[in-house]
Image 1 (spheres, rainbow over the protein chains, first blue to last red):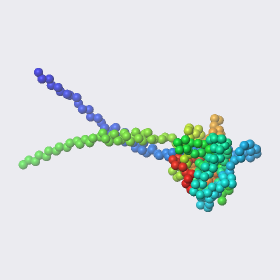
Image 2 (cartoon, each protein chain N blue to C red; image 1 turned 90 degrees about the horizontal axis):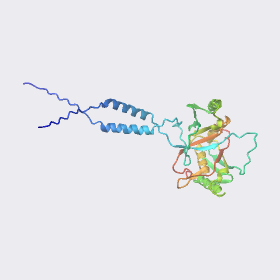
Image 3 (cartoon, helix red, strand yellow; image 1 turned 90 degrees about the vertical axis):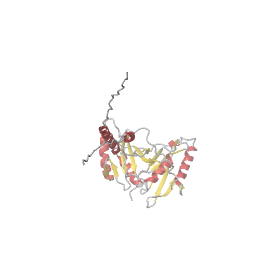
Image 4 (tube, rainbow over the protein chains, first blue to last red; image 1 turned 60 degrees about the horizontal axis):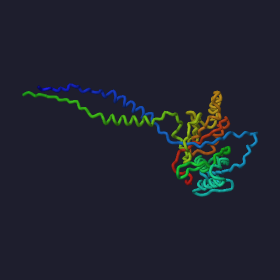
Length: 163
Length: 153
């Protein structure tokens, strides 16, 4: 006897068209709503308006004053911390080293938190230089990628009159 | 003579599998990267870069973003303003904040996104306006940089 093995399973034809429609719809939606967000970070500064009649807060350390003078193009002409002048290509690096020495000599890292620096920048100075000065003052990242805090209290002196 | 025209249309079925594979790959890619958060970032603002600029650990409770382009136009709340315009807008904003009982002006973080070519005095005037309305906490925003920006003249 011969057994006929008739395989009568029909091939099920999948309807691909609606799926592809939806897939493309989704694709177009995600492409349209896609926006590139660049990584950004913040420097936090607390800067309330100084009360006019209140006595100045008693501070053990007088604030350091960082003077930033601009030339007529808005570039940094002179960088001065108190009486100390920083010149040349690596002036921000020199400022940073000075601050680092200042802070870490006073009994190990982490004690510079109390020190305050006031940045007095010319009106016409490009904002980029102010940011670099803040970077030099506030801390550094060591070769292992660990951030260290130097000076926490940075404030900007009130703006001078527009030229 | 008889000409028999034998038509043999055959349905050519291309292989759809690779295309669908790719389409799903793309969908997955965009789905993962999509960002619905309403970050205020204007492409006209070219931020100064700094290696210390780190994103905040937690999102600010009450951020208030003020942006300034290189030509010192102030972008605030979807409007292009000058300093007087900003003062008016901030007046409205601060009164709005005060009208909520559970919010205080001191809780608001004013995020300053200023272009690196903008004048520092102008940025400080923006900060001063915010201070006049009682805002205390500021965040100066910079672009993250992997290399040190200190050595650059």
